[in-house]
Figure 1 (cartoon, helix red, strand yellow):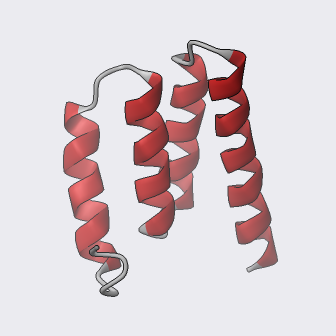
Figure 2: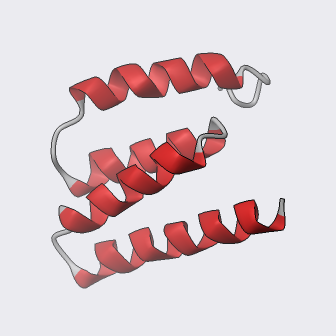
Length: 79
């Protein structure tokens, strides 16, 4: 909601608070990756997508994370 309202700094702050409380599991890191990506912080987004790969419990979860990293890189290479 914060990103949609154009408040990327507030969204980044909220994602940082959540990151400090994140459990070491695939869903937490995957969703933090998305949050940081939407908050325009590709470095932290990539970090959390990489962590989501580390904690993935299936090939499907790993592939989802790899796809997000690829899309993130495409977006920031184009800009």
